[in-house]
View: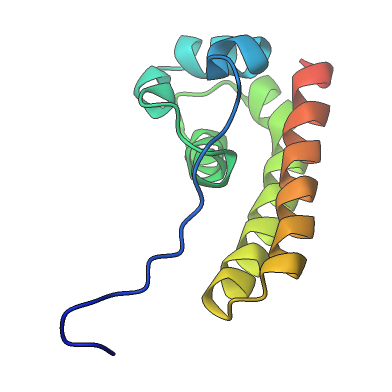
Length: 113
């Protein structure tokens, strides 16, 4: 690695409008379960997967909500793991496809709430 330069490849969110407007039902659910701070600073969906995963394990979250989100969270976590590996190996075309799949899971969860 260079002594004075670093390579920086990262995922940045791009919603076009506030996250709470793009995913109002997910945002409302997270806020009502005391996960509002997870929505601050408009995180990427890639980052938001971890917050939903934490929520799905939280003993304070009612079991009916966990049952509703768990199938999506399970799929999102698997997709994120593969996406992370692709990001590290700089396979950006393949990474893009997995990011689309994560987005699809968020859209499906949004429509199911």
